[in-house]
Image 1 (cartoon, rainbow, N blue to C red):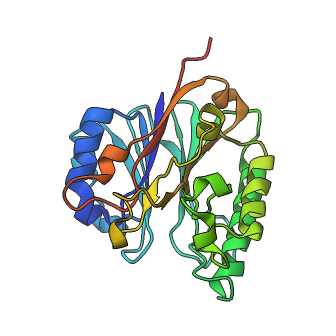
Image 2: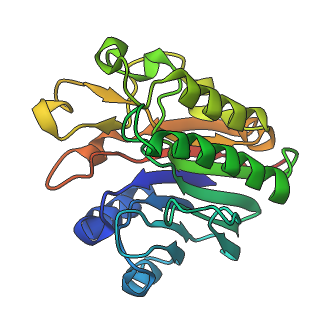
Length: 258
């Protein structure tokens, strides 16, 4: 099973790019973030024509998440199941081919002194609580998306350029580590140890061509899936060309259970 994640930074603007990528990458499950669409506007028919079922959670503003699957899409749930989930449409989950898949768009946090920063940490903590309430680390579970956290210094082109900023602060990294401690593996990092492997590049300053990026798009899976993952890729080619997203797809290949 090929499980992919991609922050498309507006599906309205990027639908043709997504259709093209699906055509050659052939994911079994694709988690989308930042669709920036309302549920009524989501292009279900376009994905149906490609052989995929879809589920979407969006309000037409800045967030929006979706699941696109050709291996089944059942037991869909949205949000954090929390009364204080006030961060917008940022999570959707479903059973896809025997895997409980979550597409997540973690809040940005804006700056360390902004009220959105502690809200980001709280959101990650509530995500961990959701997993503890609804899943088991012994089961096949995937949590994929734009985490807006670079797990380590090697996941940033130059960590000194981010001093005193979000995405690299220790509380954010600790919150991500606590989420993984529930029973998730950053399987891409397990397969590839080297640095300078990024999934996001700022549109400004020629950052992509200067290779000034961050690895903030993650595929976290339980060990039962990680043990069967033999290949992973950050597809930099999807960041090229006309009107790309500032993120690029990340995917893993999980072999059949024996």
